[in-house]
Length: 106
Image (cartoon, rainbow, N blue to C red; front, side):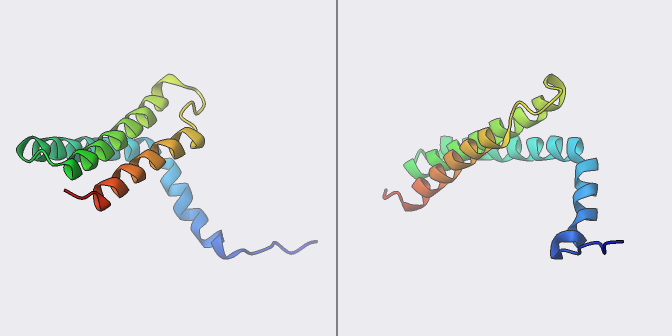
């Protein structure tokens, strides 16, 4: 009888299982938090229309749209229409927007 192979990441399997069981709740929570942060960013941009703040607001808008699609995915698709590749594109745009905001000169 072969011995079971133990990997360093095996200890994380329980945490991963709990996260998978709470996936729907977590998606809704992150969507609500991202919408709240987007609201704050929009209000801040309305007060101070700087280029940097515009890119930060864009990043939070993309983040909220991404999580809106992930929540929509729970109801619309039996599978995963918003797949990892699509999510990676959103994250690349978010990082690009934050990078631009960080290094943009006023």
